[in-house]
Amino acid sequence: MRRTRRIRAIVAVSATMVLAAGMAVAISTSANAATTLGAAAAQSGRYFGAATNSFMLNRQPHATVLNREFNSIVAENEMKWYHTEPNQNQFNFTAGDQLIAHARARGMTVRGHTLVWHAQQPAWAENMSGTALRNAMINHINRVAGHWRGQIHSWDVVNEAFADGGSGARRDSNLQRTGNDWIEVAFRTARAADPGAKLCYNDYNTDGINAKSTAIYNMVRDFKARGVPIDCVGLQSHLGTTLDPTYQQNIQRFADLGVDVQITELDIQQGANQANMYGQVTRACLAVARCTGITVWGVLDPDSWRTGANPLLFDGNGNKKPAYDAVLNALNAGGNNPPPPTTAPPPVTTPPPSGGGCSASVSLNSWNGGFVATVRVTAGSSAINGWRVRLTVPSGATVTGSWNANRSGNTGAVDWTNVDYNGRVAAGQSTEFGFQATGNGSIPTPSCTAS
Ligand code: 9MR
Image (cartoon, rainbow, N blue to C red; front, top):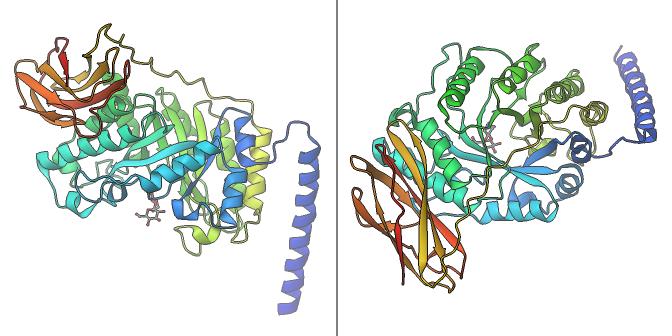
C-alpha cells in the first residue's frame, strides 16, 4: 500500500517535471520571453522585488538569486523605527544605506518599509504618548525620509493601522491615541520630507473585499477628496491556501480611486495550490494598469518569517519552485497592460542670490488647522559655513515640531539656525529644514543671514 502510493507519487512528480520541461522549452523559444522575474515584470513597466536584510547581501545562495531575479528590494526590518532611531534623535542608517547602495549599484529600485507602525517601535517611543509621541513621530519621518530623500521609490508611510475583524475601526495603539489625524499628519510630513517618493498605506488581511479593506478604501477616498497626499496602497498578501475570489476586484477598486496598488509582502503557504495561487496573484496585478509591482517577502524558503510554511519562490538551495515558473510564465504572458507613467512632482527651484550670503524660501503644505513648512536655504556665489533664517509664523499659529534646524521660539518672528550637519552649503547649493505647526495663514519670504 505504502509502496504503491510512493510509486504513484513518483509518477505524478515526473509527469509534472515533463510538463514543466515542456513549458520551459515553449517559453525559451518565444522571442519575447524574459528569463528573470525582474526582466519579465519590466516588460510592462512593473517591478518585481524581494524583502531582504543587509546581513544577507553576501550570503549564498541568497545573493545570487536576489541579484539575478529581482529589480527591486525592500528592507525586511532594517528601516523600521526601532532600527533607524534606537534612541530618540539618534539615527542609525547604516543597514539601510547598505541596502540602498546594493540596489542602486544594480539598477534596482528600493521600497521603504516602514516609517510609522504600532509594532517594532523603539522602547522610548513605545513609552510615549500624546504630543510628545506625535512630535517624535513627525521628527522620525522627517529625519528618515529626509535622509533617503530621492532614493526611495515608494514609502510605506503608515503600516497596519486598521483593526482586524469586521469593525472597520482603527487599531488601538499609542499612535492612534495621539488623535485620529495621525495618519494624515504622517503622510503630509512624508511628502514634505521626500517629495519624489510615492507614499503608500500598507496593511494585511486586505486581500479581497472585506470590512478591513473597505475601511482603508474609505480612508483613501477621504484623503483624495481632501488633498491629503497619498499615492498608493500596499496589499501585503500573506496568503494561505486559497485566494479570495475578489482579489483582483479589490485591487481595481483602489486603482479607481486614483492611487497605485502594490503587492507588498507576498508569500503563500506551500501546498497543492501554491504555484497556482502565485500565478493568480500575478495575473490579477497585471490585469489592473495601476497595479505597479509585486514584492515577495523573502527570497529563500528557510529565511521566511513563516517558519515551515515554505511560502516563497525558491528553496533553501536557491532552486526555482513550481511557484516561480507560475509567476514567470504569468509575467511573460501578460505584459501588455502597462501602468500609467509616473508624474514626478516638479522640482523646487530657487535662483541663487547674485552676491554672497544666502537666501531662503518657504513652501507650505496646509490643511484645515495645520501645516508643514519646508524652508530652503540657498547659498549665494560663495560657500557659507552657517546660516540664520528669520521667519514669521502666522498670527495664531504655533510651531509644534521642527527638524534640521535650531529655533528660538514657536510663535511670531522665529530665528532658525543650522544644526551641525547642514551649516556648510556650497556656492549656489541648498539645504532644507522644516517644521510642523497648528493654525493657518501664509508666511512672508524669510530673510537669511550667512555666518
Ligand atoms: O518579516 C519580519 C520579521 O522578520 C519580523 O520579526 C517581524 C516583526 O514584527 O516583521 C516581519 O515583517 C512584517 C512586516 O514588517 C509587516 N507586515 C507583516 C510582516 C510579517 O510579520
